[in-house]
Picture 1: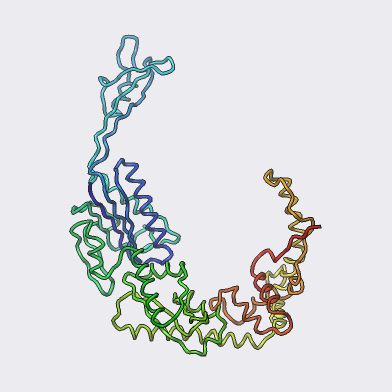
Picture 2: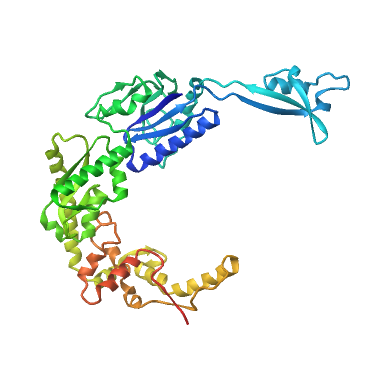
Length: 460
């Protein structure tokens, strides 16, 4: 049994592409090995922003020997009346790499046919594995790019390939890049190294400040964040999607804590969270009582050297975002919801259809009737709709109808969409209204961004 390593070295990939791509790589490589009758025990995957790697463990030294019976033409076609072999029979045996001496006849449904018992000796794994270059070329990505003078497209330019079967290089080539045993360490902390054995991969790169095991990196990030939170008596919301994204942005993670000015806590929480989590990939912090504190936790791709400079730089960038948010928030507070609603009349939905105000009323007024008609159509066209729903009429549930005029008000806020991409920015509008209950405005603004508007089913 052997170990085979195949690494694709690239320029930094987008974080959301890394995990799906390495899983796709392993799945397609496994299918290739199965189709070529190369047995193996398991395929390990390793990934960082700069590499996609598979490690095949327990790989057979050669293909399994195969035996099969190949059916040819009928006997009356394979031989003439004198028993001489026809061109059809000769061509059939030649195509299978055999001779007419290997032919035997078998009866099938009362008719005799030519059969060949074909035995194929398995090829060595080293002769099959170069075909994996087609798997590398065949990986699919949501976006692709060209580089140099090549027409070839990939997620990012490829800079190196490692292809090792135990201690032997398995030759393959993509464009002008030939596979070898040289891989790259961390961009700033490591160096290029030559791997002696395929099994040395993980530990050799660890010495060059690259943690290729994504699960190990993620566990380390969790541990570092937990330690910072314990030291500062914070509670951290370890959002799974954010953790996955951060994990795929670094090769040697080091978590750090930064603080911003206390005054920015006056900004609504959703804006703070958006600025930290979505824009900067920071984890926000709360105190023991669940209140947000003026602090964040980030993860750098490097070690602890010059960490103070890194923290100052991150605080500076976040402060600029929060300063913008504070300005737009203050501008929005100067207006009432009625003024926002009035501004909708100046926003064109379509030059032949009218403004956003007209669109709002067109979309909301006939909705109950539309749903009733749709249900009737579903009952006529779908056999699965056997029973009517537990209602006989559709009504707006109070107090939604009173708040409908406000349901698109947030579309004309000063706060830009990148600052709070957020339907959650409704608190901003709740804070500037003084006439209706906050719940009414909050829900009407929330539903103003999606279809359908809230409806209740009522029994007759």
